Structure formats: C-alpha cells, structure tokens
Length: 268
Image 1 (cartoon, rainbow, N blue to C red):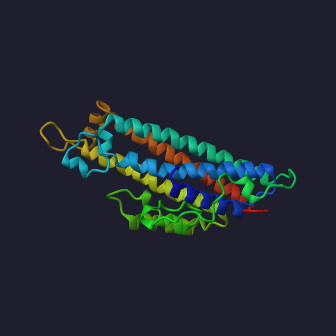
Image 2: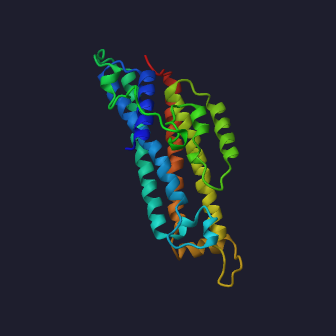
Image 3: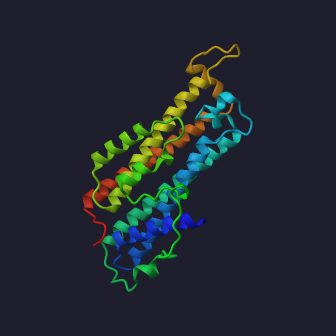
C-alpha cells in the first residue's frame, strides 16, 4: 500500500474507532471487521471507475467519447462481471458485520482491557508525512455529507457533478442520519442509488448505440437488443451489475430501519 493510502486509512480507522468506542472484546472484533470492509468498499470505488471508463485496446475516435465503449470489449465485459460479483460479496459481508455489531451492542461480554492503540493495526504515526493535495486520494468517507460531496470518483467523465450533488443532498435530507452508523448507511444508500441510475442509463444508451443497421441507419432499440443478444450480450452483464446495486440498496434500507427501530447509538 502506498504511504498516502496507508495514512488516510489509519486516520479513518482511528476516527471511527473513537466514535464507536467498543466496550468489550466482541465489539472490538465487530467494529474492526466492519471498518476493514468499508476500506475495501472504498478501494473498489476506484476499481469500479477504472472498469467503467476503460477503453478497449483497439478503439476508434468515436468510441473515445463514449462512456460505455468497454461494453464492446470481451475483456471489459469480463471485468464488469467480476466487479459485480465482488460488489455482491462486499455487500453480504458488510451486512453481516453491521448486524453482528448491533447484536453485540445488546449483549454484555465484560469490559475491554484493551486501549485504542492496541486494537487498531498500524496505529497512525504522529510524524506521518504530509503529501500535497494533488497526490492524495479523497479522504475515506467518515459517514458525512461533506465527505460524500468531496469524493468525485463517483462522477464519471460525461456525467453531471451538479446532478450528483443534488441527488446526494436530497437523499441526505430525507434520511437525516444521526450518528456514525446511520451516516455510513446513508452514504451507502446515496452512492448506490447514483450507481444504479448510471447502470440503467448505460443500458438505454447502449441500446440506441447498438441499433444501427448494415446501411448505417437507426433501426430502433428493438434492433439494438436483438443485435446484442446475437453478439456480446453486454446487456446481461449490465443487468447483473444493476441487480447487485439494487439489492445493495434494499439491504442497506433494511439495516437503516433496524438501526432506527433499535435506537442504536454509536457508543454506549
């Protein structure tokens, strides 16, 4: 891991650990696992951006301007399929870690004798090197609207950053999260909704781009669908990707409702 990534991950881990401050050993395990998985989810925002913007090795000038040109590349489709499976895995794991932490918060396993430094792997060094802003990745989201708006990895070339911010502010106002855990879930709901909207838009754009006949005339989206079904079946990969995101949204909503019902605070 490069130094600036290690530094930002340590800052995230320490901040969240202090907010969630575990009372006993089981909570320490649950919180550590949850935070590590969130760091993996943060890493895969960058992976997702690369997969969705990658150009085929052999591509035309027209394809340079297309957001979805990777859909015509077998390797690009394979990468999208792998990405969908990994996102589904991260969602399942983080769901279990949220639920495990909520269960541990309702149980009494005795006071912890560990301090925050011994619980966190690679504690931050007070003399850590400061890197110029241009070399830093966005801060790992600490469950705040400010972090959400600052992280433009979610806005791909050709997308409207103002629309992204509008969606983010609107949903944040709707959920009005209280505490770090609700902040995490609200950020997940916003980013997942934005990504699902993109996946649906990609399918629409692809159908229209794929509907040209042999004579160069548009034959409509129906022809585009048939053309894809007889060829790369890129729409199947896009639909699977969209499904993973929609299921993630649904699972995060269930967790949010459970948090609100149990009135679970960050630290007890």
